[in-house]
Image (cartoon, rainbow, N blue to C red):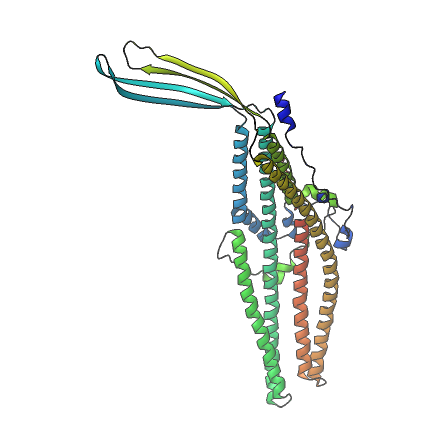
Length: 458
């Protein structure tokens, strides 16, 4: 009856905050068909999705990053820590057994004078707490959920490392492609400058027009130097991801490095599938379940605890007429909380607040994942439109430059008109490269937002 009264004193579990509940729309704002344009959408994301870009050098870099990245190594160590914590929590449900041994010597005064005695004692002690209120079980289940959360976190880090490596490689190839355009433009400007110098010598153009040509050449050479610096910075950033300082990747010949990369197809998926495909959402869900179990364990702390103990051993005294004595004990104890100045209630309130924090964190993870996909899908549509305009503009400017050059040679236009056409075409060619870089990176971001082919381990 007393135990029943104490059980009634345990606080009732509190419900989750209503505002922390989350639901997702049935469809995306942009469909996969809209985002992929003429390219057919894919049915699902493969785990080795980056191989679809069609670059074997990139495949090798991703493999190296997954093997040597520091962040991923730390995440794997956190998994081992969580595994050890789970093993420790499980062990609490089992009895503990300890061995003891001791030796004692002394000189005592007796009728026959001073006698030297020595005693030796050895024994075993066992103790066990029956899990009457599932407190230990709840703690073990909380540790199991935290272990699964750490595994999901490790997978999320692996996806982030993969995506960062792919984007870093795309950025590097884009910089190298821009440098190729700039170097080609420098060569063209040098030829134009040589022609302008000859025309200035015969008085066909003014000194001011000649200095404009020289300034244009210097401006493009400056951009080449800037791109060289940016390429080295990008190589250093990739080296950090790969765990390889001093990384060097020569540019692909003929500008094929960036253009050879295939645009990833847009996966056809539903918002509800995010809950099963995102490792960070899975981690947040496991942490919420862990907080639930911890809250139940804290609630069980209000109830009595039973402790069973047993011991056995022997005592030997070095007297000749004394036989070893066998010692044993068996008992149990009941510890019931009566007064602790509100300590248990405060701990229960703290556990409730931690559970609520985990619920809000789960809601944030789901909403952020939905926003990531929506942003990437919308970006895919907008970038495709921009690319259409950029390609048409580049083609128009190529024809414009050819026309300006013909007019200049025929004496119908000034040299500044050709310089202006060269400048516009140069910027248009750079814009096409930058937009394709953005399209490639956008698809990588979309694949990362959709989970990168992740699935929970059984």
